[in-house]
Length: 188
Length: 188
Figure 1: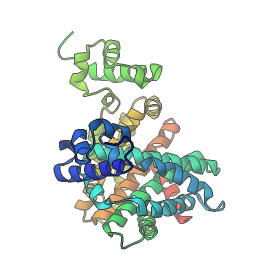
Figure 2 (figure 1 turned 120 degrees about the vertical axis):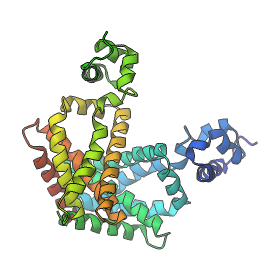
Figure 3 (figure 1 turned 135 degrees about the vertical axis):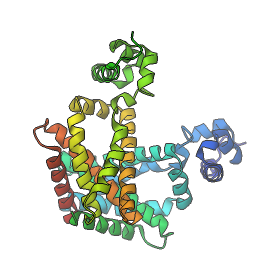
Figure 4 (figure 1 turned 90 degrees about the vertical axis):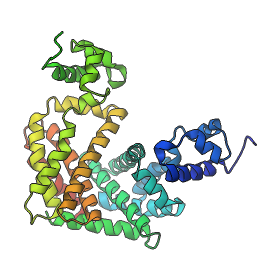
């Protein structure tokens, strides 16, 4: 096997998703994933630190991308408007990158460990948004609350987008969720 | 040492909080906690399954209490109104139970592992609220979104309540947060 194998990471991601779908996350080992990808267990750990991270491949790019987009939003935009504008732009880009979104969603939903990792990723998104809002001179408590609200909107919009099988744009899913949040609060 | 020691659990909680505050969560062992509480390491594990759970002592009572309160809310109440009404009642009870809330808050904020466990607890709250709303005939997508929104409101209200040092009622903190959420959405 060549030491430099440009397709390896992609094959590992695909193999992990297939195996987790077929057998359930708990019944798959890193060795199983590596074998299906035609690699060794040791090669796996050159790409991913653990058995969970293989499903969250590009997730570390999301918080800085969102922070940058929040800072680039209209300087006069209200805090949540700036956050949602950022999420709409970055989410549209993300929706183009993500492969096998529905299969991945089902695998994560079925595993407490994977859901835990997903919550950690969501917390990193919240933190990035909050810090960018604070840089926009938003008061800390408001920045935290708005960042959490935007993260809820983002996650639910992504689920809608998956459920719609790509027939609805991510931006439109985010608008629907924002409208529902507004409607829910108007009824209290 | 007597086999039945009614104060043991309380002493372990107090010892853990003190030690985590003094040395930081990562620098404390279960043996340290047990020793300060005048107990053995083995006794510790009769009360708590791991090093984190000692800070989340009564948390398993929260999801069923919230679900029950959601089901007991006015049958005509809108989904979020029912969830917030439940949170106000259960949160007021919780605020009376919780000791050393500010110290506990600071310890959790300082540790990624403890924040992770707290997110797992919050997810259990969201799930309980969602399931109770579905029992109230709320459509599944709306129940999930409203449950997440209510969980955000609950967490932020609890922080406000801690910051106010008990001088503001939990219900009033929850109203303040709900008003802020409504204001944030009105600006988008």
